[in-house]
Amino acid sequence: MDTLFSTAALILFMYMSGMFVIGMRTQDNSLVDIAYGPAFVVVSWGCWLTAGGMVHHFRPLLLLTLVTLWGARLGLHIGWRHRGRGEDFRYRAFREAWGHTFVWRSFLQIYLLQGAVVLVVALPILLTIASPGAGMLLTDMLGVLLFAVGFLFEAVGDWQLARFKENPAHRGRIIETGLWRYTRHPNYFGEAVLWWGIFCIGLGSPFGLWGLLSPLTIGFLLLKVSGIPMLEAKYNDNPQFQAYKARTNAFFPWWPKNSSGSATPPSSQHEQ
Image 1 (cartoon, helix red, strand yellow):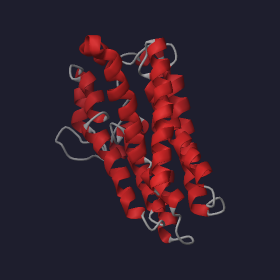
Image 2: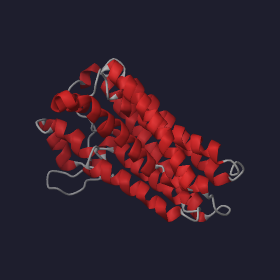
Image 3: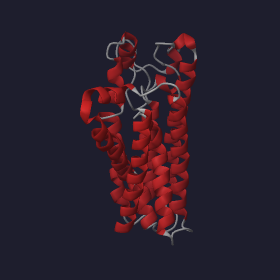
């Protein structure tokens, strides 16, 4: 077990160090966002290949398949979205605020911190590779179901937002249709749910309960740190977003509120 986690930490250190070099050369630290999803794929497969012996157990292979599907899609989506845009506003703010300490703080607070987050969030996968447990359980089926729901929310939400932004008539406007009508962050909601699914599958491992750190960490980051708060701060002075915020749940999907503050079923709402 200790050897496996040492291997995972080393893989992530090398991976994030490589991304740091690329980020410095391109003067674009937001490339670390593109590397986030694939980091799970790299560390999961790297640990599985070095573990040996567990090749034929279905649970590690199931988790490897799911995390590869998720990580590859997310990396491709963020990479496509990022093309031609330059460094994201969050990382530009760090660049300006950190001044002459920018290089070493970038390495520690962006790249290595990202690697540490990946190590914690990947716990259910690493624990399952180390000790996959018995045969198929109800928690495996529940986990696959939760992963599917979360993956669809994240992928469809991202696709709907991308389609919305492709229309020049929507420039400067806030998406309020599709999944975005019921939650201001369907992609974040989907990511949280799918990691609960991965945790449930990981419960088949004798050490599976330790994997609870994974969805709890994701939920905390999305709700309190680098997800919703940081993104929505960008729209503090946007009247359309403030009106949208007043009637739409931040995270959990639900019917939009009407002017009186009560939820209104979709049949009585008009989508723009």
